[in-house]
Amino acid sequence: MYDDVGRVHGQITLRSAAPVRRTWETASREQLLRLLRSQSAFYGAYEVDTARHRVVHRLEHELPPGPGNFEQILPYRIVGDTLHLGAADRRRWLLVRLRPSGSDPANRRSSSP
Image (cartoon, rainbow, N blue to C red; front, side, top):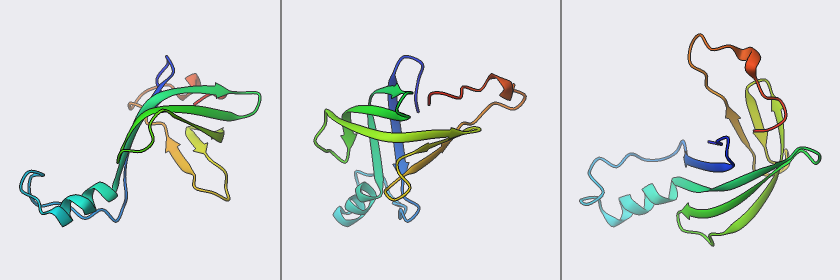
């Protein structure tokens, strides 16, 4: 999720994630590892470079823990309400803007995520 002041955060769950049928306090080590490996979360700042059609993410923290405080530069394009992040020949993400029913789609932004 991108906000208007340059902050970004996200949470990703793989489709293959196996449900844990207990609370995390009572789950087995194997269940917790499987759960951790199927999840990803992050937050930080972002900046859009419209001239180069790329977005610069400056991630501050992530889960599972990673290097922290690193920069990720991804090409982007916007088609309607869909933000395409990343190159076609590499890992990429498609993010679709959700709107409340009855909202006016004429207020779309076309140059930044």
